[in-house]
Length: 140
Length: 140
Image 1 (cartoon, rainbow over the protein chains, first blue to last red):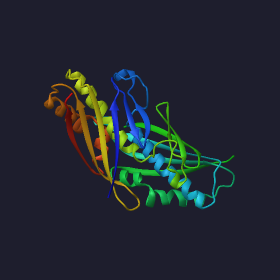
Image 2 (cartoon, rainbow over the protein chains, first blue to last red):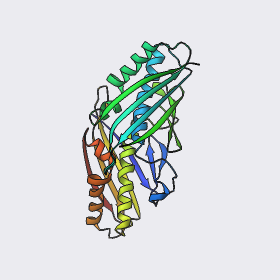
Image 3 (cartoon, rainbow over the protein chains, first blue to last red):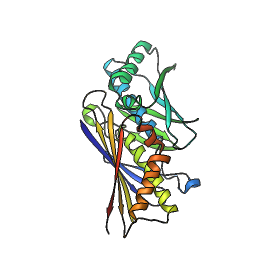
Image 4 (cartoon, rainbow over the protein chains, first blue to last red):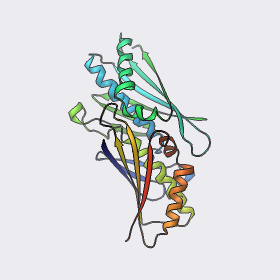
């Protein structure tokens, strides 16, 4: 077992400054609940963690396969309950590649290796909800 | 059910730019795995989501209770497996307040309301791992 630690410091009103790997992120709420929108809401960062984790896996695996897309994005769409506590019940990951003649089977292999073997956030969240995905190729 | 969406765009090498609630966060890996440390690693953002979610709840509930600490921080310590996929198996939340004669029972009530009723991230993660917490008061 290894351990990781993060810390957030209150800045007044609803804002917090997070320290993560030596970098700072400001979190804030919307004005309607007393915030000033100085930074993102904290909850969607759970989806950013998933997108970044699997996105870095895929980039890294594709490099080893000598596949380099012109562009690559990862979207995550999360379903939330309407009642408090408003928790995530599902996340859908959309891998979107742009490039000429990208080999679909290699993209699928890279995504599958991340989902099944490498992405620790996907492995964590799978225990709490359904994680699904799709691959889209946009032609240049 | 409601839905939320985030997107990250690849910036080359291991870096991605995340768009969250109209704000940007750069994610990057360390040089050892091809990154340039332009931003935090994605995985610990899962802990920032938890800290921020419950931290905002607590600030908001304490305000209604007319309790205002001089300072307030939330730390999250996460346990990770050593083997791939390196997933979180537990998170411990440390609520750290500084102030004169802070009423412990109100701090406990605010934390408990967040943990049990309001924090959607806590409610999500509880299905995947053990979430524990403690309150520390630092005297001025």
